Image (cartoon, rainbow, N blue to C red):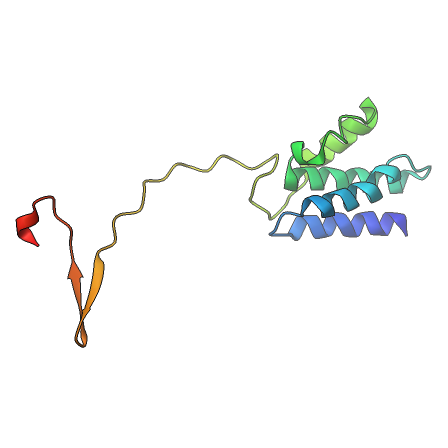
Length: 130
């Protein structure tokens, strides 16, 4: 049951398009961190995959140093799972790329209702042209 739960968490995180809230992250950590120390290897692997995928979605910083507190072997497995994880979420996370700086949007002309018609008003630097 533990292995299937960790696998389900991993699958859910891979297809999410919304980042989990901090309370959700805390709940996921509460379930996955103890599973890393389980005696059965499939459970440990599934938990490492789940934590790696969670880290890919929310970033290492959002996990509050929980991964840094792990021993080196477990931390390496989680980091490896994070590198291999493929997620749909494109927000702030460990693997998100900085957004390209785009030009500010062009000024939209103002519309003024005149009777049944809309009149486009343009702003000029010279006040005589209005």
